[in-house]
Image (cartoon, rainbow, N blue to C red):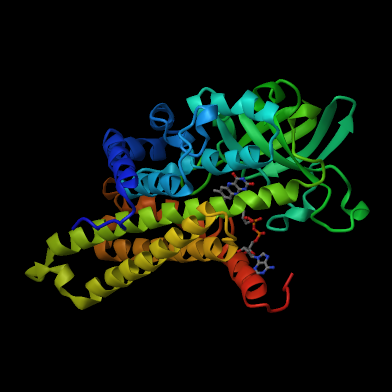
Length: 390
Ligand SMILES: Cc1cc2nc3c(=O)[nH]c(=O)nc-3n(C[C@H](O)[C@H](O)[C@H](O)COP(=O)(O)OP(=O)(O)OC[C@H]3O[C@@H](n4cnc5c(N)ncnc54)[C@H](O)[C@@H]3O)c2cc1C
């Protein structure tokens, strides 16, 4: 049975239909083959770029379509719902926000039209490091000013899509932690042209993961980048990264809602058809209830995604809503994944049903881009006023 969508107006309905149509050209066999070969969905990402879907948030004056965040959320939700995987390209939508909100006019003119046309790929986001983990203020990668350049040294980990991106948004320390009054000061954000950096001290090492995610480690050894690639003011980078995180959480939450819908449709369909003991397995409440529960969880998460997106679009504070949306949606997609596996029994483990692939893919979102514990800690401290725990 096909699930109904929230009522969100004609434009969003049309976007959903176009994405569903585009995704039909990249059926399950396409994703299975990529998963088997650990390969990047270049054709799919190109088709999204050519259709203008990855540039919906870029203002029209720079070649995008200047649509609100809910349009981007609908695109990513629909991709996941179709059984595809937007992780290959979702970052462009939210990384670009740092450039849009904090870049200067020259930087916007230099990069945004190319990103909008698909000619320039801004898919890599270098924040996480092996030794600092979630504690971003403890990153060790440094950027030292040297005349008209900065010299970058250090290492990033889990820099996804680095091999399939022309540009990277990089967070590095420009003033040592011991010399700043607040630990989040002294961090700066840069645009790194990876095509140049690869010729001059930057190396990329792929990490194989349990799902097909094109993630990597990136090493910087005396990589010189022009000082004009600094975004905003030196030392204020942490704030710029934070300002994009609400958008990131809302968009990832929308992807999780899409995953949950895929699992629920798949599970309820199979439960209604599969006959054991002479009747459909879905006639047993033990099979029905986990699917129905996951459905209820997904609907609640979907409403929270909508509220968070509306507040974001109205320029209101949406930290609480974005974090809750991300947590509820990731939990709903995981509950739906679990119910889908159980409903399919042994067949859940067969590649051709796609359940095991989606199951591996959706598990990520309770850990990245922010783990559930850190969201609970945000709610405890910032919403409920309890003491800071770390
Ligand atoms: C496939 C994949 C792709 C990724 N892509 C990117 C990317 O493109 N760019 C990027 O910068 N990063 C990326 N990440 C990194 C991701 O954001 C981090 O993995 C995530 O933020 C968690 O950091 P960590 O792995 O270092 O875990 P840690 O910080 O080591 O935490 C480990 C566990 O301890 C818990 N924990 C830590 N501190 C506390 C505390 N104070 N209270 C309670 N619990 C705590 C965490 O919740 C977590 O469950 C990616 C990660 C993965 C796995």
